Image 1 (cartoon, helix red, strand yellow):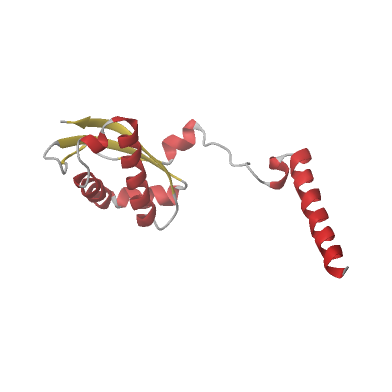
Image 2: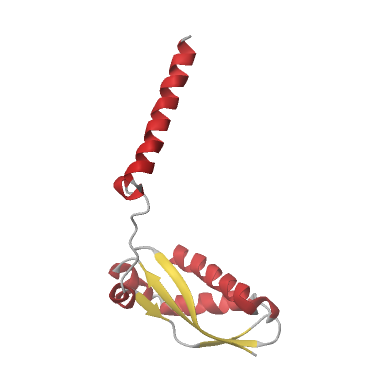
Length: 139
């Protein structure tokens, strides 16, 4: 009987908790309360790369530019100082892609994801929020 009472008590706590979240809303408990950054925040916390032209694995070349959104002014300042490393990361990543792998939405999304992962590991004073391709040509 003791185990049954413990099980019922745990079940009751879970049901009450889930009911509270449902009726009071996610925001009352801090879930889903992340606000989207304003346009001013985006401009203030973004870094644009230079236009980068480099060879691909398929003997073609790409011309790209990125906009990188960071979570703080400190992270933006750090990434500004690391622009040569960012440029090197872009070149290294693109060197592993072929023209066919970069074709279409999926190709651009894969490029953004790879650069995001590389930059997230690079930035020590904050987080990379997103990476956007702002210029893209493959020939």
